[in-house]
Every structure is written in C-alpha cells, then in structure tokens.
Length: 379
Image (cartoon, rainbow, N blue to C red; front, side, top):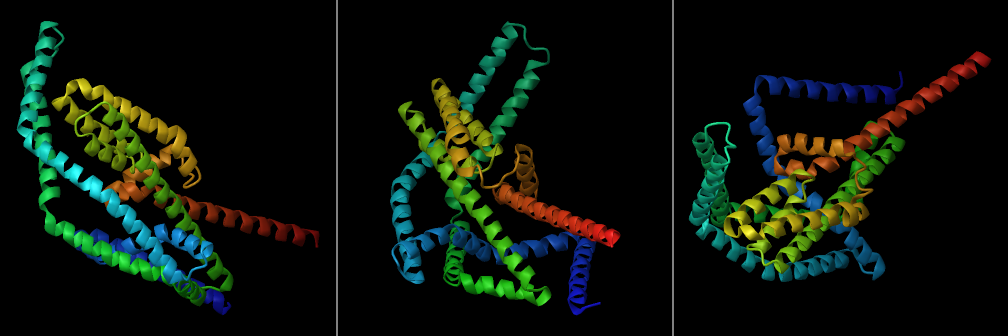
C-alpha cells in the first residue's frame, strides 16, 4: 500500500467521520445546530459578499487591464469608479421616485381596504342575483375579506419595516462594504488565493488532482458569473420594458411595480408570478381600468425574457431543464430563504457539473478496466 493511497484513504475516512458527527448533531441537538449555522452565516456573510462581488467585477477589471495596458490595482479602482458614477446617477433618479410611491401607498391603505370591501360585496351581490352561489355567500365573503385585509396589513407592515428599520439596513450596508473591501483583496490577489487552494489539494492528493481542482473552481466561477450577471441584466431589461409600457398607460405606481417585476424576475418562474399578483392587487384597488396595462406589461416583459434577451444571455449559463430549475428554487428556497431561491439554480448547476464529472470518470475507469481484462485474455 503506497503512501498516496494511504493519504487518500485517511482523507476520505476523516470526511466520513465529520459527516457522521454532523448527522448525529443534527438529530440530537437540532436547535443548537441551527444556532451554530446562523452564527456561521453571520460571520461568513462578508466573505460571501466579497466572493460574489469579486466574481462579478473581475471580468471588467481584467478587460481594462488588458485593453488599456494598466496595472491590476489601477484597473480595479477604475472599474469601481465607473460603477460608482453609474450607480450614483441611477439612485439620484430612482430613490426619490420610489420613496414618493411608498409614501402614497402608506397614506391610501385605509382607502384601499374600503375599496376592496366594496368591490367584493358587489361581486357577491351579482353572484346572488344570478343564483351562482352554491355555498353560504356571507361566510365566503367574510373569509375572503379577512384574508385579503389581513394580507394588505402585512404588505403595509412590510412597507413600514423597509422605511423605519434604519438600524438593520445600516448594519447590512456596513457588512456589504466589508465584503467590498474583501472583494478588492480577492481580485488583486487572485493568483495567490488560487495557488493557496492548489497547494491545499496537492498536500492531500497529487499535482494532477490539484490542477483538476483548480479547473473545477474556474468552471464553478464561470457558472455563477454567467448566471448571476445574465440574470441581473435580463431582470433589468424586463423591469425597464414593464416600466415603459406602464408609463405610456399612466399606470399608478408604475416605478415601484416595475421594480417589483424586475426583482421578481431574478427568481425563475415564482418571482414573476408573485410580483404580478401584488401589482394586480395594487392597481385594481386604485384604478381598476388600468389593470389590463399590468397584463400587457407582464406579457411583453416575459416575451422579451423568454424569446429575446433570455435565450441570448442565459442559454449556456446553467444547462438545467425546467424541472430542475423549479426544483432548485423550491429546495434551496426552503433551506436558505429568498437568497436560496436566487442562488438555487447556479448551485444545482454546479451539482450537475459534479455529477457529470463523476459519471465521466466512472466510465473512463470501466473502459480502462475492460481494456485491461481484454489484454490479459489475449495474453
């Protein structure tokens, strides 16, 4: 038994032992394990932000570095400077309009509840006149009123939370900028970190495995980069198209609805449905005759996403079927919440990449084994 085999066996047994300990911990001390995970997530959040920011900005930094023959650090600061200028211009136009929309929505919430109750009573009155109610109409009406009024109150609470929970947002901004600071190091010393990872793998395996591990990391990075940057760009286009359609139709709160549609599009399938339902409810209670513009905006935006921009940008980013995309959103959403719904697709794409490589490796091993057996038979 050679030393390389002993080292690999020891490593695999160590990993197996850690997995068994984790499983036992989860089964015996579930609440304590969740507390540990939440603590780790809190401390790991700046590093997660840093990795994602580095992945998104690194291509631009590399392009400026090669195109204009600048040093790495000058290219980095040039990229961030351009990004800050663009972001500042957008926010100076966007935030005042968004705040104004939020203020209007908060002020008209009581009127929205009254309007909804009136519309609902008119609908049930019409159904009674046409003898279309098969159950107790009063109970159904009361249940529907309670459901929607309570949910409207939830929406109002969310709006208040977003506008009043200043401390939380300041803390999140601080963590984000801490991640931004880490991202600068990740970009500047990209070769160092890749070399460090390569050496770690080399300590356990060999030079060939270390090289393959680095190639695998690059493939994972490309999957995340292609998907996240593509999804951000596509969602921006979808939100912009929706805003233009609703602006021509003079739909109330067109900016906030377009933002909801754009952000909703970041989560495949489910996000657009939820954003469309909230937008429909908001407009139908304010100006019911403008509701068809919501359907028109959603239809055009989804057509642009599904047939124009989406296939062009995202066609080669993940390579997952519709079933696995839906499954990834559901599973990762249950595990990590909204973040998991957004990151579920690239995570499952990486799992598919691992699965494909393992299958390929297994086939190669079987092919070599069959060839060896055939050669021994001939001898």
